[in-house]
Amino acid sequence: MTELNNKNFMNEIELAENLCVIDLYADWCAPCKMLAPTFAELEGENPDVKFCKINVDKSPDLAEMFGVESIPMVAFVKDNTFLDASVGLVPKAKLQELINQYKDAEV
Image 1 (tube, helix red, strand yellow):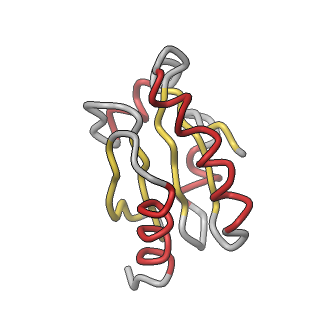
Image 2 (spheres, rainbow, N blue to C red):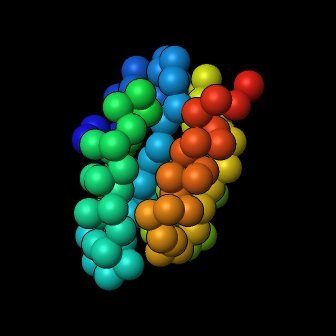
């Protein structure tokens, strides 16, 4: 899973041709740690979707760009367009539902 930062964001997200699902997290955040295994499972189950992570403490500019007010936050981006975000610790089924909704969305 790619860790995004200011240097690789353009190549990894802005130029991506498919849905990108981004976990915005912090190392100190307990709910973020609880989400991590679920996020990894979803990555393995959705090979046609790009999964990435942003550490909000290490990349505050990216966190600000996504308007992060609370973490964990999972952002959905397609064709360099921010589609939606899920905030808080949500069930795997809900995240999969959002992935299914947005991977076929017209942007």
